[in-house]
Image (cartoon, rainbow, N blue to C red; front, side, top):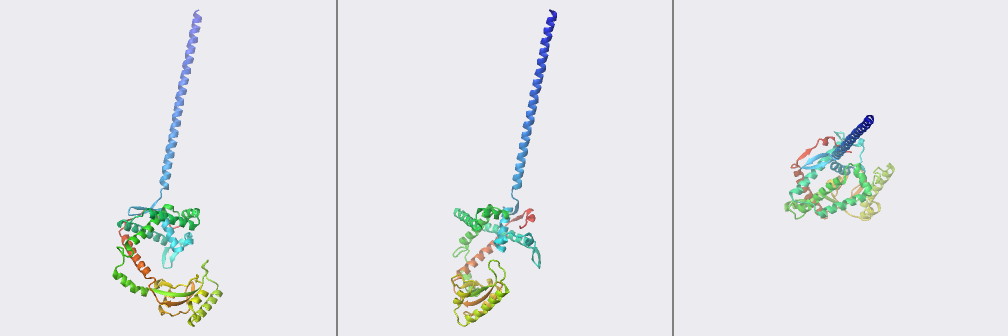
Amino acid sequence: MVDNKEKITKKQSAKKSSKNISTKKTSKNKKGKKATNKKLIFGLISILIIGIVLTLSLVLNTKEKVVLTIDNIEYTESDFNMYAYLIKYDYFGINGTELSEETLNTQVSNDSEQTIGEYLKEKTISKIKVSAAILRLAEENNITLDEKDLEEIEADREVFIEKLGGKDEYKKLLKKNHTNTEAYIEVAKVDKLYSKIFDLLYKEGKRNDLTTDELDKLAKSYKKDYVKIKQIILLKRDLDTNKYLSDTVLNQKEILAKSLVKMAKDDANFDSLIEKYSESYTGKIESEYYLKSSLVDELKTVVNSLEVGDISGVVSSDYAYHIVIREKLDNAKLEDYYNSKREEKLVEDITDNLEKIAVINSDYLNEITIN
């Protein structure tokens, strides 16, 4: 009986021990799982934090670098490149906006060590400063853009896109020039402000219009500065390639030009000769008005020597043979002349504002190049 009791007690004791061991194992497993879960959670949080840091880093890195700060306005790399595109367009036309490294590294002239790239960069910076001066002049005179102005800017942009050949070509142009639509619109806004400043302050009868004395003086100088002519033009260059024609063709044209001078001076109708022979004839014979200063040197010299009604000999310029008849100047371009002088006054005021603007060059200005 005692033995049986002992056996029973031992069995119960063994069961308890077994139960305790089992409980300990379960407890350990639970603790192990909790530790594992904590590690997983910590790992996920770490990954999340790293992701946030990387995202912030990318955002900060993709933020555009500031090239110039003028009157507290920041001009970014895209702004700079848009102005650079306009400068290249002014100097080289649409086909010259993609310049090769070789061209950009070419010296401007034999007398200067400055490269074309450096020259274009200098002109770009100047253009940005002028834009800032226009903004200042507009602010000083409380001139702002309204909804209609913004709609016109957008309409002009759509026309520009259409001329390029569509949105894809527009995007390609922006990408090639490392700029964007925002920069395009900001430049367009400045152009629109310039027009509004002129219209509201410098046009006839406005506050900054030419004075009576200035108008009187300009009426006299108009007769000295302007010339009215008609001309027969025989081109020396191919209009599509801009290359000179062959020597044979040029010799033939020179002979024809000399014979046309003889015919014109022998009382042949000059308009008829223009209609029949001039390669600039477009279906309508019109007199041409020029500021003498804008004529090529060869024409300027000859025109100044002609009296009204006189016919020139053959005038050879870089691009054509010319035969010119000088006509009596009328006042058809007088108002245009006045407006050009009104605009000169505006430009002078903008130039004065250039001295007032506060310019801060960023370190990045030294690094950025024309491309």
